[in-house]
Image (cartoon, rainbow, N blue to C red; front, side, top):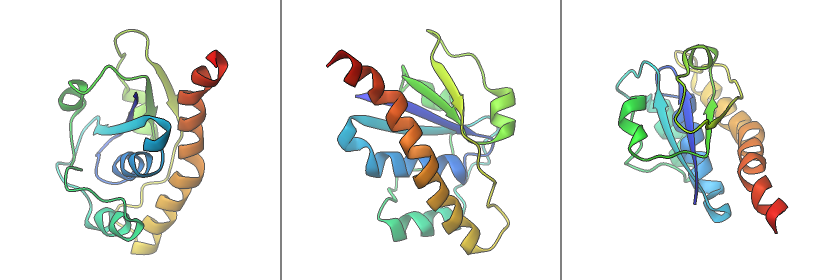
Length: 142
């Protein structure tokens, strides 16, 4: 099982959406996601829960977490930052874990449609990148 850590600042919107969508759509590829925030807000935005429920991807275990909290789930094969603040404050990870950035605009404080749009962008733009990063070495060895 390959593990990816998705980071943003508040861990209330983008990173939670990314975690849920990776777990929904890439588990069959042997990829499992976790998320955390560099400065977590301590709550999941209610619109995130709603958009993920509509996608069939919401799980009760999704919650706002610190990086320290989620490190016990490692080691990670890939770290992805999804906001500029998290990219700038991204800590160094043990073992030289590859870190990439795929940024998305924060839907927090915007109408529900912005959350739907963010979910669709994450699905379209982030999932293929993670899949490519974490399955490339598997196919090269085959």
